[in-house]
Image 1 (tube, rainbow, N blue to C red):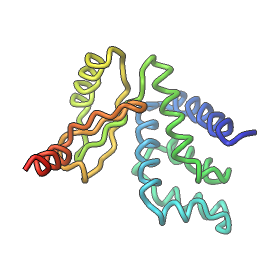
Image 2: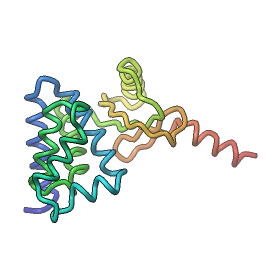
Image 3: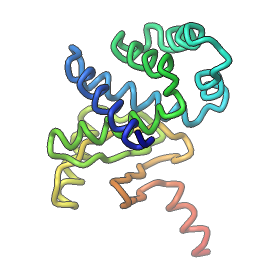
Image 4: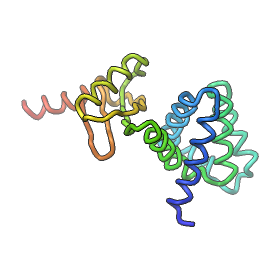
Length: 176
């Protein structure tokens, strides 16, 4: 079985598990945020993908990391991926799951980078504005990225809409 097929099989299974949970949207958001943390942390990535560390110990690391900060379903999903030696594919699997979730509700996935967390109301207004601009509905997933400084950077597929203060300041510097 090819790597992309395996990623998609795991993504489909995780989507089913998340949808069966009492809080499917929260589980998806937690997994999405965890995938971004995993990508940004060499230490975490190294620990969870090191097959010389016994799987139960890697699962314990997941449980200690997430603890009460995540739903039990999120913790169980990540623990499952770690025990199946799929931690290296964690971001790909979770991104594929998020795409599947968006497609299931006839939406595209919009990855939004912001220096601060966005409220539910702000996310809803952003989704409505993107729908108006693009002509189709989007599901917003927010990534906290302090380097944005202010504003947001939105990526939908290959399309990037950069409304960040960082970019505007760079443009002003170039103009001077």
